[in-house]
Image (cartoon, rainbow over all chains, first blue to last red; front, top):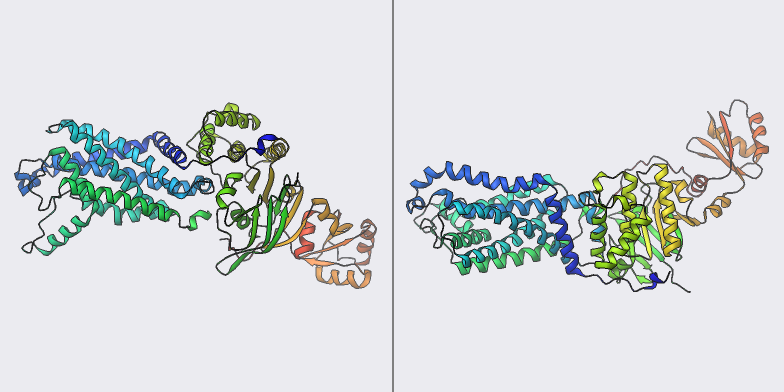
Amino acid sequence: MPEILMPPLAPQPLRASASLAWREIIRFLRQPNRIVGSIGTPVLFWLLFGTGLNNSFKLSAAGASGTSFLEYYFAGSLVLILLFTSIFTSISIIEDRREGFLQGVLVAPIPRWSIVLGKVWGGSCIALFQGLIFLLLALTLDIEWRPLALLQLVGLLVLTSLALTSLGFFFAWRTDSSQGFHAIMNLVLMPLWLLSGGFFPIPAGNAAAPWSDRLLHVAMRANPLTYAVAGARHLLEGPSPAAAAFTPGLATCWGVTLAFSVLAFAAAVWVSGQRTQGDLL
Amino acid sequence: MNAPAAIRLENLSHSYGRRQALVDLSLSIRSGEIFSFLGPNGGGKTTLFRILSTLIPQQTGTAEILGLNLRSDTTKIRRRIGVVFQAPSLDRKLTVAENIQQQAALYGLFGAELRRRRDELLDQFALKDRARERVEKLSGGLRRRVELAKGMIHRPELLLLDEPSTGLDPGARADLWEYLERARQENGVTIVLTTHLLEEADKADRIAILNEGKLVALDTPDGLRSSVGGDMIVIESPAAEELAAGLRSRLSLAAQVVEGTVRLETPAGHQWIARIVEEFPGRVGAIRLGKPTLEDVFIARTGHRFWRERQEASRA
């Protein structure tokens, strides 16, 4: 019986997070349909939209600079992959709750931030992995590869994944069904992506522009994801296509994306301290 | 060794909105005891379990676990207790060993010590040859065992189990109790469980009966039974109320009608059987004599049957 008298173990929140993140990755790898779905969808979007819309895109000002839509759309697809993956990992917190795994974690002697970090960390690793696979496709594009820019791009993608998984966590925590989460996804996450400049350039926002354009202009500039897409485009193609009426500088892109991820993570930690009805399942 | 009580509650109350789930609960559980909370569904067991396991915050009253204050020392308590939930808490996509490792990481257990304890537990719970199998492929009984092993990886001094035999067949149930006994004997763990099964509660050292959030009885199983009296006579009758009244007035027996059947407790019950049948011709449909069971204790203390269908299906 002497072992009982040993002092209890000291919890190690960071290593606990790492273990939770590892679990996310294992789970991901053991569900092949998730891998196919989250890589396949953006690739499909990219190819279908990219080729389909290429002709109409050429007529616009952006197309005039010689960029094909397939090229223009690439940075947007990259961010879309991150978004999709973060959504999938966020949904898993709902599953964790429903399947009961979460309750065991909630009564463990670790702080809530450590739980959030594990989830976000794991989700970001998966998102990044897929982003990098997609990036290989960029080899088919007419891009001048600069190693330093590529390194920066990876850094930017890491921050963006952290931000998006945190945001997904924030919404998923209080949701007790995946249906509920889909509603939030359509209402919040899809517009976030559609208005990120990934799909179409930011229209002019000056007094001469129609009011709908002006509205769009404001919404897109206020969207933190715009800066992730613009930053990715900077780093992929160098100077951005002339088409966009507004192009944030690379430094701004970094600043906004960093702030976005810090704020989203803080929001996720905050929400995880809130009791939800679902805890009691 | 003068160890503090494993659990000490004083005037613990809890409510969900206006519904009172626990009312002024006071009791003390000794270190090393196997203690069971028995009650029908909705009796307050699950709420109590959630409070003790630190899943929901304590509202009013005092609660001490292993001598620590439940409200202020939550993290310290979490390090020293093991929790086995009613709903499975395993990750089905992970293997048995991976689930245990995952749990260990949450409690700060890594490396060689983790592997040593993991193998020990796998051995103890006869799970060694299943260690690499994914949980989704295991039977209910095996999963329960993994839950137990998982809950014990950090060597808790107190193990809390919510309805541990839910979904287990009788064989698996017997196994479970064997493991619990062994855990107590080999590791000195205090075991506290909730159950709605009378025969399961019977295996504990002491039982607390909860009904509608209140503690209605607390004693050893035998103590509870002997508190009821000598023998139980249960009569089914087409005219229960009339028969009970007759038994009271003509034979001076303390007969009660509980949900359609007449019940009474008396010493030397066998001597009464023939008399009752003769005295009330046509009124006795069936008559049964027996020693008091825990259900009789429950009825004696609450005035209704253990399995009464509850009108309000209001479980939070």
